[in-house]
Image 1: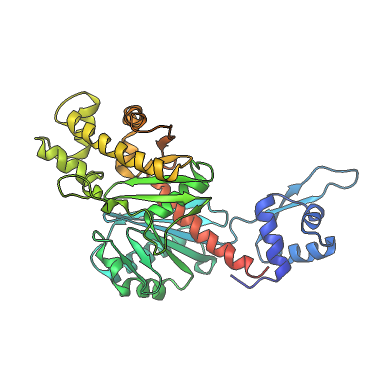
Image 2 (image 1 turned 90 degrees about the horizontal axis):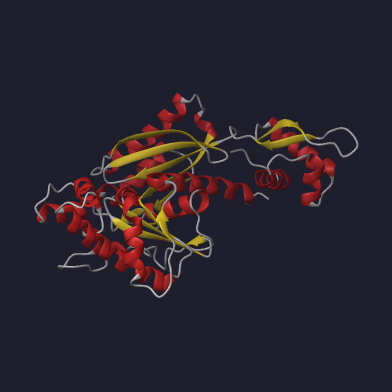
Length: 368
């Protein structure tokens, strides 16, 4: 984006928060003269950052013109990389998603995955007839712990391509804009906290899909620990020499169903449990017991305002929430608000968009 003056950056930030605003009210808000604000707003309007959207109520004289942020001034890309699927979203200057594409993940080869992501992003922009120069930031979320020094992901066995330095290097080569890399569950927690079910100043997002992990929102911010590893509870020991990710995931639920004589499809296990049929009923009951144990530990340690269940398996537990809450109440001396993530399986993608846009506004704020 073109460099803005300090006053232009302040005006743009204020307009983002205040919404439709007049020059007079913005001058009062910023504590500067109306001509100073007017000059900045004229430059921003000429650059396409702000637009006139009508007139406000009169206070005795002429009705003032109202200005607002132009959502088409710039765009960002959010990318959610999973072991099975890549989803790419193009969003406008307000963070509203314009279009989404998805493909099967090129999980094994770093350059192939980077090419896939960047090609999908630029194809979306081209398809919407958006000049590539107006795409000004991106965020890519993925499993594992991103190392900003080595520029690789650690602890991501299902996505080996991201553990190769060629991945980030290829992204930079094909997408010459600021790109942030983030853990997928942390991104989901941010997406849900900022644009979904919230949860007050603290919440825990539990992701159950291909893997199992937690995103911790504490004091309104993601808590990722001293080394970016907070929330990697999928590695916690479970039963029969397994870790939680091997139990509280789609893969784990399917395996337990198969070992109990079922089809091995987690959807079949859940469907049987809903009908009170075996082996799904016993398998899902054991699954809920383990999940209740984990949630009670999370609740006792963190006292979150809300626990949000997401990911493919988490969303599929909607019908079992009353049962899960009963099991949890039997383990806890106080209540925990457990519910499904409002954004369902889109939480991480929306979180990536949110983080990409945050980066743009951080750069604008640096000019103020």
